[in-house]
Image 1: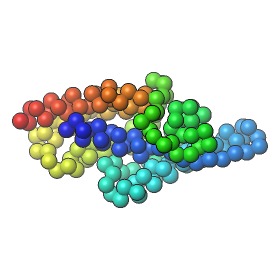
Image 2: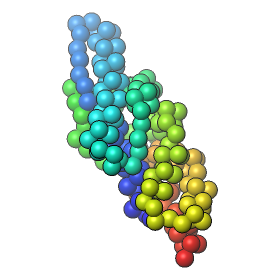
Image 3: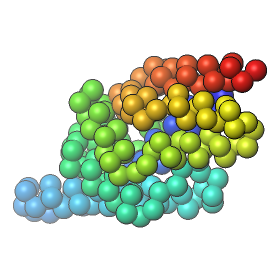
Image 4: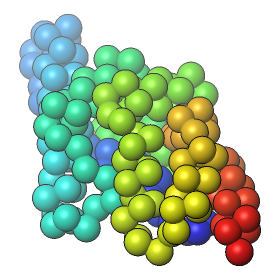
Length: 183
């Protein structure tokens, strides 16, 4: 149960890695061009990740949701900060590892808010938990009541802040209560 929740959350976070690039002679235009390319790269990366998973991904987003996330991350956090955090490399290439991302609390909250504004994370998490097919209806109902949107928002904010252990605890504690109650 603990690893399923952590795996689901990690799968969604990893699908947000981005790539891209661009330049221009005018600094203001270059920043705008880089932002546009960074937004598109984030969305493209989400879509590519889903294609490569060939239906094995725990989360599924459509192009509109991916575009929304790319635009939101760049608009709310900024290309330069996404580079600083290791979400994007200096030359706007795909980050090698999302495990090292550690945003400021404000930016982590912005990233989490963008995620929830653009997608139905609660439904995706519920679907991911149900996809295993090993949960009885009572346990599934308990999980849906225990792993609330507020808990998921807190978990993703902590994940974007680089606090993986705390993030896992936010959802695994309620999940463990449900698993224990089902026994």
